[in-house]
Amino acid sequence: MKIAIVTCYHDPNYVRAVTLRKAFKLVPGTELTIIKNRRKGLLRYCEVLWQLWQVKRTVRPDRIVLTFRGQELLLPTLLIAGKTPVWFDEYIVPIAYATHENHAFSLRTKLFHALARLGTPLYNHLLRRCEVVLADTRVHAELGARSAHCNLSKYLALPVGTDEKLFKPAPRHALTTFDVFFYGTIQPLHGVETILRAAVELKDTPSIRFIVVGPKKALRQAVRRAQKQGAKIEYKSWVSFTELPQQMYSSGVVLGGPFGGTRQAHHVITTKTYQALACGVPVIVGESQATAPYFLHKHTALVVVQNDASALAKACLWAFSHPEELALVGARGRKLFEKEFSVEAIARLIEARLQQLTK
Image (cartoon, rainbow, N blue to C red; front, side, top):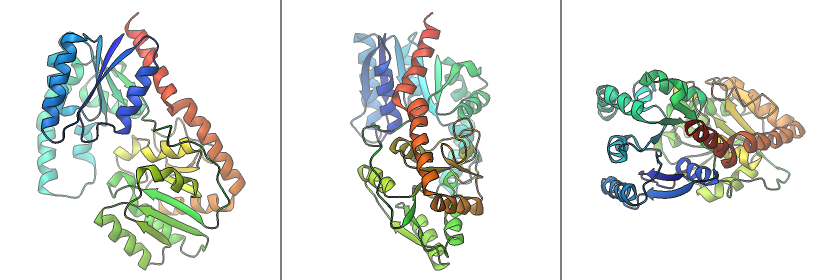
């Protein structure tokens, strides 16, 4: 089966696109043609559509897969595809999150919300024309189906996974300081304020230190406020992607989250959670419908109620106080990753759906 995988994004090698390419490649009997942009800005759309048109004429793929973030190209992709079935990686539900997340108010966001509402009927129509719509979790698939008024059977939940060559188990040495590691942004779903309040609650526990990484000014200012309240936080504006595994290995626990308690926070498993699991490093995740099928508290992860700083602080304190049990949590988390979130696991889900469609 000939598959054309299309990516048009400011980072064409974003982890979601890469894991999908690798997973489709593992499916027996598939021949892949990769289409991705090299240009930036508006030119990337012209570049990718031209490549897709050429591939449609010469390769004649049996299916076209449009990866994240392909909302802008969904209509022209369907037009070029014609009768060729299209798989669309919705990944997140933009219409829902444009109007329900607690983002800071601005004229730009208000305009985006208005455009999202106006575009909903057309977007839902395009989704219904796709053979398969991909999501990252089961609850995301359910939300997408409800939002688009589609049958849930059209959706396929595929975990994001991670770069398994980079994020993998490695020997961990005795820790002189128990570091609680978080990297990310101050977006509402992550619950940065919850993390910082937990750090303040643990200010009198001398051996626990929080390491917070993120480039945004708002995050830096929030960290400073927590530090003034006595929180032991080491702030870094930047850690290169290739250095993240080493930062995780040297930490006692990784804050995978999300902890924000927003609508989106209850539908996702974060990228850093997959990374920590792949490394075999213990991770703290936020309790949600997305995490519930996989994570058992103190077994495959530490699970805490979202938007609850005290619960997060208690989990960090338990992790610090129970090193042997914590090591087992990390080891079981790695096994969970291999079974449910690895590229091989993603490939099995894709293969099963293709077999179902081609019977």
